[in-house]
Image (cartoon, rainbow, N blue to C red; front, side):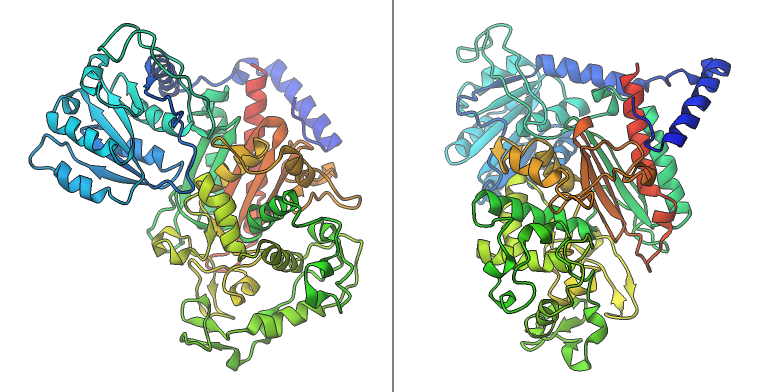
Length: 614
């Protein structure tokens, strides 16, 4: 069972529970599972048993390579094409096109063929009605000559006769329904698996017994009941999130829960701003603040250590020449990653800038963008900030002092050892091949402004509302990319990245990191703190109940100053993500004082415990 770790609280709660059990037993019964979720699970099981994968000799399904694969999806009559494409886009970027093919009022297939010239993989949805049209078959045959195609047939198995000439993968599901569309989309990317065979001969090519097996390789999107949790037991999340909005702890939030590789909860709350009308969406992009330390910097460190390009017990002077003549020379990388190097917590660089250090207009001399209409002087980091860090006091070496300076140093080491900017290295090594669509630095370069959640209305430094520019002042002054802050992402992208970590380094059929590397970095590595290497961890001081009173000793993750957190509990196969903008329009401490993040995490554990006690 999961109990609070404070012994006194544990005793009192057990006593209260016993009294409640004796006096109010009927009221303590498990709440019923919602009928719509029961029906959905039944439907999913039926689809799984009837869906068949054909022509998969090359093993293309599930799609593995996302790094260099530009994918398009075409609907030729599927009524649930938008739902299908929405699921596809949870795995990677997929561009949607639509044409009924046989309808003269729709986009012509010839024009559609022209639009597809830059794509490598084409997913084509057909139905019983569209597949018998000669123009559809001609289109499929033409496309498969030069592209990798995947045909998804929503309809009768007899329609396979029209697809005898197709050599590339065909997925057949028996109905045009929402559940079928979502199942087929997840099958393409390995969120679900199939093992069914044709039950009779349907054509000279598609004979009884044919069909291919697949394995689950990526996240599945379902309901809590998929993993044995009653969705009603998660209703407390809505209540606590609603409290956060009412108390103005944050204007909005997105919460995601992944259990055993299945996304069982993903909701948005509130609005982008208190006085605006833009509702928060689950696809919105948030400033992650210090989650950058584990989702970017530590990932890079793990990869470089595996490649023997970086050693934890080597001194930083061996990697940073300018550190050799300072007292930072002998500090080991391990000490830096554990926050035991003796660095001061931070330097308020922005308080010391001169009028000549910035400009409201960009130019060759002022080219480092820190916000809208705010540009730092070129070379300011190298000439001012970096020397200050190299020569900053070193007073607490060997003691645990959480410091942002540690990740400034790690960014410099990563870039020297990888020979790439940090933002490019993590994008190429992790984000792009994993299918992470939004994760990265400086999102305003890649995404519309209204998809990015605003943070503080900065009245003291940049004197503008920050939207798509990093909240942290120091990270902003170096152009939005730093080792301690600057990463932006949606909740779904974080779920992908940390499911890979929870999987022991594998995701989508690719090995990104070794299991032993992940275990080393995420387990307790300090004799004087709870920390792992880069990762924060559960606190063994049970009175602190951090990050949750039920968190196990296998819990690791990080929080972010902007009102974010991600926690992974390997014991329970659990990922919990909370994203908010609690610093809008100015910094508020209510999120922490109300324990919003930890209380929501408690609800999740309690729901898991109830499912275990059924």
